[in-house]
Length: 587
Image (tube, rainbow, N blue to C red; front, top):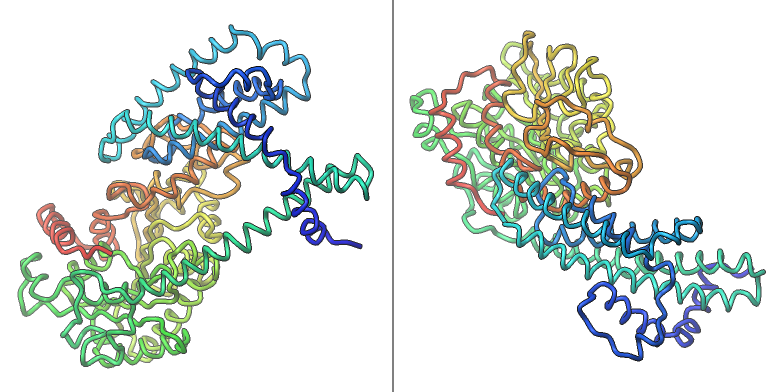
């Protein structure tokens, strides 16, 4: 029996030689004429019209789809996202309308009438104006840079061209299926030939995408990631404080910590900075300890954890009052806003510990090894807990856990239950936890009746509190220790997107007014549309201003103050935020 891939390999060469390129080119020319009515195509193309009769239905469907394409999502869209959004949704609308037109003959009576086109065009014009107005409102809502309506219009223009390109690609695919079908009809009955032809073309396309596109992309990404891991970001230099890994006194070499590790160890406040910002006494202020271990060839996670424990003993970490384990993202990145704030508020009497477990950015790191951040967090936490258990109960440092994005995912999944983290730590701060965290989703599902998925309330907020902004921490009930804060912006697509969003209305779209202060208040779920639009929001989530999207910035000052049970004056808050912004290492 001949396998489908082998059959495809035999059929494709014949397909290439027998493909009807000329009709496809005429189709493209006429399609361009339809999409841009102002263009004058040659008389020959007008005489030999080859556009299918149901193409008019497809154009109407595409135009209706554009109404939804211009509707708001979680974040404002730059022009290129508007283009991608419009192109794909118009192509989907075209396909659906064409299918309906083919199945329901009665619809053929309506699509050719000028009145229909005029009515749809009028609605499209209105939808465009409303879309531009709402886009500007979204920009003001999060304080983003005002891109102006011209960017939206430009995105729409490029999107229409993209829609045309997708239709042309669809026409070439149809020709390919027809040609394969004619070849296969020699083996299979006519009714089965079409199914087999579609299967052959689909498998061939997927195989080509996997072996040529996806694998090459991952290979190139891995090479690029290893190169970036060797980069020294501007403003980073080897630390000379014995309290830091990578220093001349450290067991960890400066060259081994990677580019993100160098940024962690080079940056952050020193004792003099803490004194200047907090106005604390030199006698009550310490040089912060920062421990970071990189990922190098031949070094396992076990070796990394062992090296961290050696660094803890070398630096005297167990004699400090506070320890925070910062679970990093794939490349070893941890947010400055969290790490720096922790040191300022504790007057340097603290230890920050982290390590690298991948070269790849978060998305690719999770794709290749979704257990990587979990294993790193579990092994590091177990080792530190064993060291703390050796100390007398009254002289142990307080242990805190922190992670953002993939780092938060790793911590959330350590024990399979987020609440169990409170049994091992004195405080937990998770921000921007991805939607694929099953433990976090299970925690939200256990929320108190009447609370929303955007801002769940668990046991009245006794130990765990969700927050889209610092004011969400305020509740009528007493907040007992140990405390956990789960920060999740209403506009963060990484927190809310999953594949089910294409087909199922999510619970997070049901919320009271206080939950959605940084997103457009009248978001509606539409099958496929919402899933696609929020997926596009993922691409711009880190470009949003601080406090929105996937950027958790100044609110960390309030969150750490709450976990540490400290009062922070507006003046101190401003001074800490100003120092962090002024001393940020771009990476």
